Length: 372
Figure (tube, helix red, strand yellow):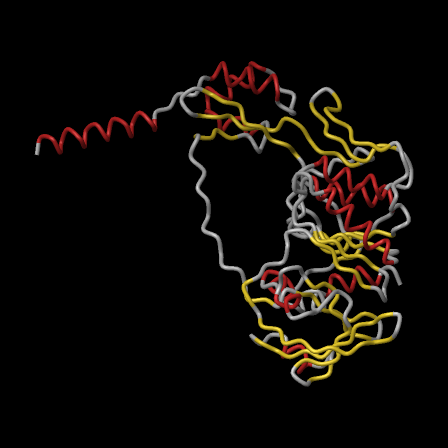
């Protein structure tokens, strides 16, 4: 019994010690005043810290917070949905397999990008029965593959499997001569893949490009700027990071971009933030890109964590992302040129890797319609 009481008392003392962390106010004030994007008087910062603790810094910077170092806990991954691993859509007068993903079930069944779809489970392409057949676990497709010598008929039996769309990919509509590039985040070093995709679709004859940045929370400003560079019509500033006292880093180009002839549009929503919303706004400033969707997040401040004693960190804003013209989107976001709310069913189709996600997404149709 005594051992139990002793253990309980020790646990209580450890708990109280953890809860009674005393913020090193002078050190925290020094760090904040030295690096904060928001100019601050040290006496005022000290006063706020002594009166309200780290929470007092929110009066100067809404993103300021005291963090307790902890091990990263990974969320359990969800099973990939059952998918055919392709995207179909109307292209001119035909329905096509606009994108057949490598290693997906449709590719395994022999389908390729651009194949003209004739029927599914006997239902003519484009009919409600045809689209419903694509939701089945298995379905038979009749298609045709165009070549210089004529259309060659083909048949494919597609059996769905666990499959997710790649994190970044493009789709090309040859009839509209429009490239669609879906970028869920500007991952480090992703610019090379985006540019390579633009190169390929431009070689097919693309004249227009739609960037899908819905849900894109930012990522690497360097990669966003590299993509802007290949679309720029002339040399100049593309976007920049501003720290207190002046520019911390400017992204610019010395050349006309090799894809400056592509006419751009961008799909955005309330989750489009940071480098993504600055990319969209800069592309509008530089190239007249039309933004389709809803107002972006209006969050372009960059935070950094600074170590404090006893396993704590102080996190606050150190810089801000700005558009090519220097516009500050913080708290305002970028307003779309065409207001368009993505239906829940369309968002679910993308999440479920449905073959009809592209065809059933009215935002894509609205963006493509701007080029006609």
